[in-house]
Image 1 (cartoon, helix red, strand yellow):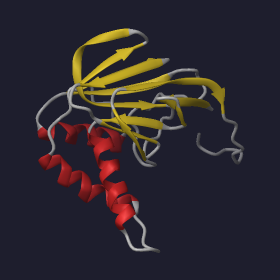
Image 2 (tube, helix red, strand yellow):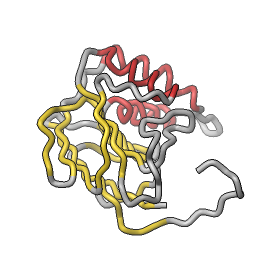
Image 3 (cartoon, rainbow, N blue to C red):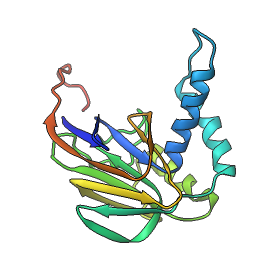
Image 4 (spheres, helix red, strand yellow):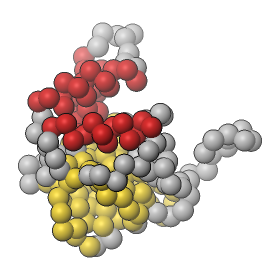
Length: 181
C-alpha cells in the first residue's frame, strides 16, 4: 500500500480539508472532554456534522495539483489513497492504494446545503458529477486565506496550508485470502 504524507507526516487512507475536517476537529475536542472510560462511535459524527452544517461558513480553498494551480476554488478537498472512506462511504470508488497516485474529490463551493448531495453520493457510492471535480495526482497543495482545518485518517492534523503527496514508501499488510481491499 502506498504511504502518503500530509505536511511530512504519514497517512494511509485519506486527508480532508474543509467541512469534514471541521467535523473531525470538533469530535476530537468532544472526545477529549469525555470522562475516563467513555468513548465515541461512528454515530457521533452525525449530530456534529448536522450542527456544523447549519452554522459554519464554507471555506474558499485554492488547489494546486502536480504544480498546476486550478482556476476555481473549492469548499472541500478530500484526497484518498483508498476507495473506502470512513468504513461505509466512498468518495473515490476507483482509488487503488498501490497505484502510485492519490485520488481527489474536490467539492465546488455552494450554499450551506451543497454538502448534502455529496454525502448521499458518498454513502450510495454513486458518482454524482454535479458540484464535484475528481482527479488523480502525485502531489496536492491546498491553501486558504482564512485557514481551514485538516484531518488525516480521522485525526486532526492542523490547518492549511497543506501539502499532500506520496512518500515513495509502501506499507505491507497481511490480509485473509478473499478479503476486500
